[in-house]
Amino acid sequence: MSAAAGLVLLAAASAPTVALECPTIAGQTLVYIDIYDGPPEQQADLAPDRTIKPSAGNVSNLWELVAGQDGLFVKCGYGKALAGPYSHIEMIRLPDTVKNCRADFKTGAKPNDLILTKFACE
Image (tube, rainbow, N blue to C red; front, side, top):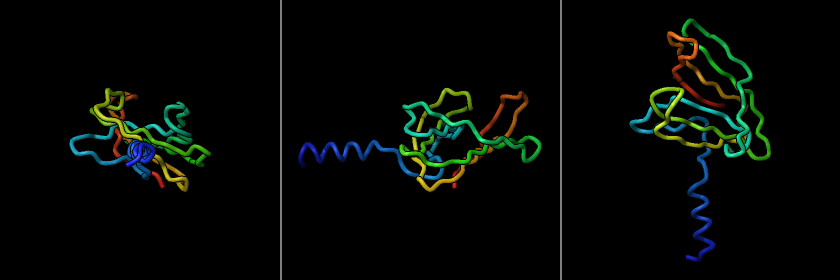
């Protein structure tokens, strides 16, 4: 294999997976997500467009999305609590056709006690 072909394989292996949700990882609990306009290293994280309370003890963040030139990315943090620390982080690239994402949380005793129960995009 040539050196150029080896570089192409290495670059492909480190590229984020294209998906609509964070991967399930054995022994890990998804506790945190962040959505970025462009690669996460550019630090252009997006605030939710809306926050709703569908029922008592639950809250959801909703993002309405349009993929820019550099695409949309999600940082998935796994651990024990939303505030971290995270035992594992995965980066995924959202398909350019994605229109919205939703993160559902259960609320705790304190206003900032949130437990991520579901995250998905469509």
